[in-house]
Figure 1: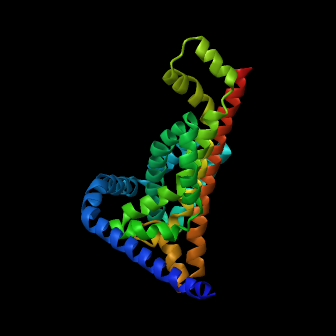
Figure 2: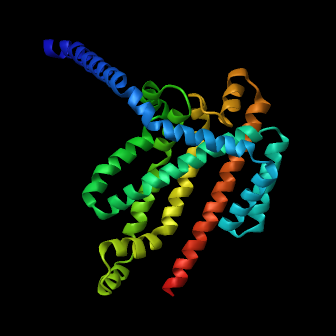
Length: 295
């Protein structure tokens, strides 16, 4: 009975010591490697600043032409293309153009980083059950842990600014593309792989010439979900110094500006719908092309 009485106090003492040890270790790591990490991410920061300035300096008719061209290239739909251009025109009319360009810059860079890192990890998972068993719990934690929790170490290491916000967006948005790349490659028909083996294809040729092309619909579904999750982090990222549509939304919450919050929130929704429709349409076209190729 005495043990049961003393157990909570012992647990609190142990936990307190553990937390103190973690805090001291992280502070020591931050002091030792903080500057080196900032220097490592400096090229990324410079590119992000350059890309944002490029979007802001580009005349709006050219931006509209690019948006329309990309929408048409992805969707092959006049409705989606017209809707995308009209949405950006409305965004400009309501004086949200600069914030939208800043949001486009960080979402574009974050998506590119997620693709560059996520697809190779997904390929690695698909080729090794052991790697899948190791990486899957990490992805589970990344998807379930509250975003404010992993903002703490990111901000402590890199401070307030664009790069910490970009890293937070990437941490939150990368799991779908990793999972769906892994799934898409694993779903490739075994008969197709046997045929590739029969023709003497090397493992690299099989991966790049057979598995990845057949997995493209799933990979693009992962890209779609990554973009959606990145957009959902816009407001959270604005709390640590990332410019964009999230800043007015945060200001509207703080000052109870309903109209301001709704307008910028709807602009984020418009971006999400445009990205979603274009990427989904492109994924369906890839799917139809794959089925047509099998026939």
